[in-house]
Length: 232
Image (tube, rainbow, N blue to C red; front, side, top):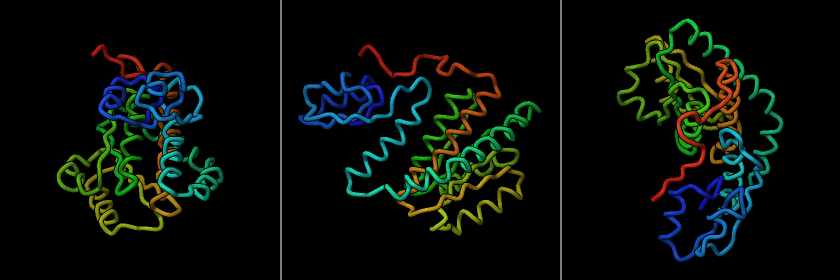
């Protein structure tokens, strides 16, 4: 079981349902790491997360890849090489979005991903929403194509596209919603598709940082706390 803090109530409730678990967390002294069901604990080594858990997300993916027998070294090397470009992309998106917000033209934003990158889209939407206070949605291309595309005019749409696996559906959908008045950005991610989640979320993390900075929102988690702890 994976938990950045090792304290999230849902994770601890789930741990009670299993005789044996492997605890993966940033805090080896946390309730999850020291749970009676934990056969052993794995340190995520992501360090302290004062804001959104971006480092933890990447490190969790690395642990899962290694645990399932995949070698992520090549994509980690690619991440290092492309980090400056990802930062530039995030900064550009933030500038564009901030101008739209300032003009009072914000209509909404949606991040689309398929296959292994659906999780990246959902993580990106979560980070952007909690960091900026503006609502970002995430869904698959098919889900968006079956109705939500009708909200496209004036909306910001971000599409995660693995470069080695181009999608005819994505190209056709992009054409349709651009014609309808959507503002579309396609993020082309290099590498084997099953490893691309390690890099596809990073531009969105930069996007969240720069947009929240422009909005003057330096203190996320204003409603409730960072860790989802409840009494029962």
